[in-house]
Length: 213
View 1: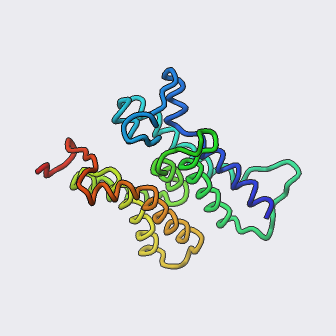
View 2: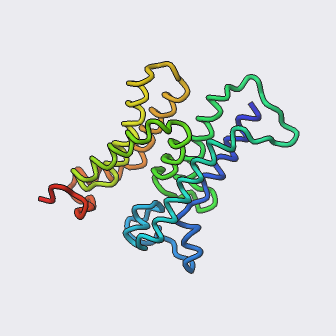
View 3: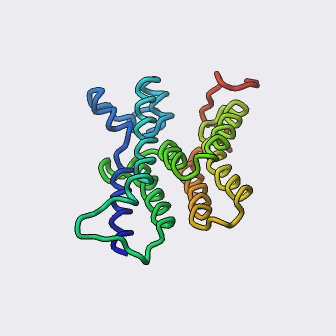
């Protein structure tokens, strides 16, 4: 179990490397948590700092999610061997979850991060590459119909779990459990978006909407 704990910790620390705050330091100390929605994710970066800033933020956040799943589970830690009691599949999804948690609650940045979307995309690219297209299609479709980025993200996370279940059933318990847990976690991190949508005060990307009325 020591291997599981240490690798989850490493994945969490990787996830805590917030793209928006790292890029902000290169831009003269910009902290987007003091602007717009106050969130340290790609959407707020786009709205407050522009497309180039946001592009680098999203790329970093995607890359760290992929790295935590692809590299950390197989990492050779000096003095620590492979624990035969730890399933490699469960270890991989545990590291994935730790990375997403690190993005949302980054130890390096006062535990105030993003909502997990871009990091989760990086995780999906490694864990479920064949289903990523489903997530993207659902995300884009919801966005152009509603204009709500948060609703698109929540829909994409739910679609990932549903797509795996429909294509593989219960044949992969670790992965299905992870996707269901992440769908619930994304709903939780977007709870304020849900409240604002119900109140009619949530920001919309009207430029991309098909039916702007």
